[in-house]
Amino acid sequence: MSSTSETNAGDATRDIADVAAVEVITTAAVHLMSAAAVKCGLAEGEDAREHLDLDEARKLITALAALVTASAADVGNQHARSLRDGLRSLQLAFREASVIPDEPGEGPGEKYTGSVV
Image (cartoon, rainbow, N blue to C red):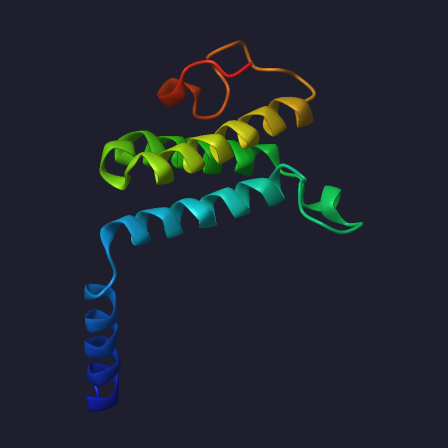
């Protein structure tokens, strides 16, 4: 590794060391939410429906549900409530976009959150 690469890696390590776990978790959740929203066809613009991909959305929502459920006690009530609200909205959007509805409790992330109706 060159000294420039080592310096950049060291800087990145110091930078991430200064970030609280709650911020890392919420940032990851927001990225998952944003990607899932696009894949559910919720992006802004006339071409939003072109990005609809429910298979991809299911994976992203399930990952988000696992993260939100597993980290809820650690991120605090205010953050957890916002994350759960966003997750529920995505689960409902997925149900609405789906031509063949999942059985209750079988939708994306519902094994972690319970049935969303």
